Amino acid sequence: MNFRFLGRSGLKVSEISFGNWLTHGSQVEEDAALSCVKAALDTGITTFDTADVYAGTKAEAVLGRALKGQRREGYELFTKVYWPTGPGQNDRGLSRKHIIESIHGSLRRLQTDYVDLYQAHRYDAQTPLEETMLAFADIVRQGKALYIGVSEWTAEQITAGAKLARELHVPFISNQPQYSMLWRVIESKVVPASDAAGLGQIVWSPLAKGVLTGKYLPGQPPPADTRAANQQGASFMTNFMTDDVLTRVQQLKPLAQEAGLSLAQLSIAWVLQNKSVASAIIGATKPEQVLDNVKATGVKLDADLLRRIDAVLGPAVERDPAQTTSPERRP
Image (cartoon, rainbow, N blue to C red):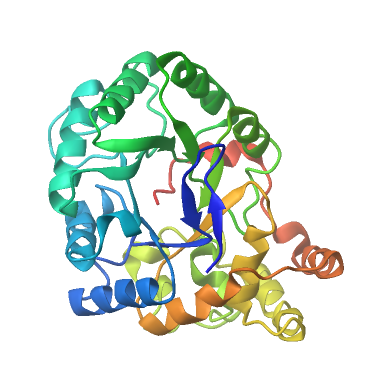
């Protein structure tokens, strides 16, 4: 496993990290979830990402049990706050009340005294940014989080947050956006703003919700045991499940074979070619998926192969930076 610094901080993360959105506490039985975490640890992954909203807080609890007994200094634990975790008006957003209450709940479920990175899961336009950033700064000073980050913030929001973070002397080091060969909306604005602010990218869905594994075929229903066959999972995949996209993805298979990679490995390696990306988050329902995906670490793709990938995907690639704030996506 290779490691990279996260932004301009001194924190190193594994190039491939393990996330449990749509798996732990919902789609995957706990024994399978624990097996996947063990496989991740065995392959050298040290970075684990979750969120309080995943599976209605159950995912954090599963991950806490899976990591119990591991040397706490030996892994990096990330979680997030923003989406509703209860029925009350203050059980959501980035108010001081919700942030402070949420970090306590996350630490309890994760069975730890601190998280390495605490992330704003979205931007909260209804709460003053100053209130949000001060609450995060206080959590860092209390030792309950070592660093702070954000997820799916626009370039302008990142720049404003970074300015306040500097004033508050709080380590603001990361953004967590969706990024893949098919979804490149961060490249034109978010990445330059993040680079200027010293933030690294921890990218989710490098396999485009599994589409870039090549398991979905044009004109055919999704296999029964896949995310697209699950009602909850399928709701996040509509942009990718078109015959045009699926046909183009199948045309990537020979390119992967020429490179000596599986299509999943090629797709993960592709996002890691971006120097602003510190880590690519993978998810898994089976340990075998982890074992396959981690082989993308350290892979270098030559310029000709990158050009051929672009030629195959063509107009199927989404590049509109306005999609950063698309409300229907909730990783």
